[in-house]
Length: 264
Image (cartoon, rainbow, N blue to C red; front, side, top):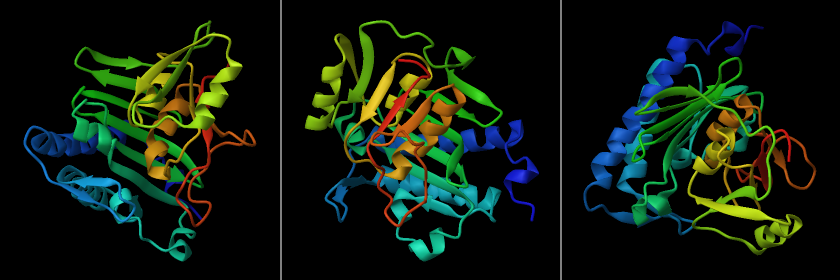
């Protein structure tokens, strides 16, 4: 049976449309970012803003129109039962606003994440940081790219890291496990960053490694994971070095993982 991916979905025109959806969602977010905004609290006590919901509606409506045959899993509509999700071969995985805490702090380090997952692997990802006006995207057969005011450039991971190792970490989270992990490096420089931009820094060679030894959800990582893979890097499970996969279990939480270039 022919699948959606067999139909060569990832054309230049298609990729451009997905990137435009991410940018459009960014415009929705910025309209709220520049004003006073309300903050609600989700069931897990994490913050939810008007911007999360506006971006969610923008992306879901656009993807539903563009690819009505592909199901969508969003952070803001994640209550789809495993019995249904487990049947999906190809689906969209989105985080309408990754880095809500960074959004609330107004430091600009938040993103819109749109990923296309096929058979558990992120085959395309678009990551847009609206305050920075930076777009990262990439996927199978596409390479990895960064687009900004200065133009569009092909990006890749650092091929031969030198000491001090550049370790990207979270501004908002720093676990004891992370502190213990860093003891293996005789010399390292911590590069603080919020949201999925952490993985993108590794993809573009601005950092060497991102150890995530703390909780994340699948929508937090998938889009940037696709960019990193296309840039020559990898994202693997900390405990067993296996590739990080998606939609393989009922829980949508990721295991601890390491994102890095090919050599360290």
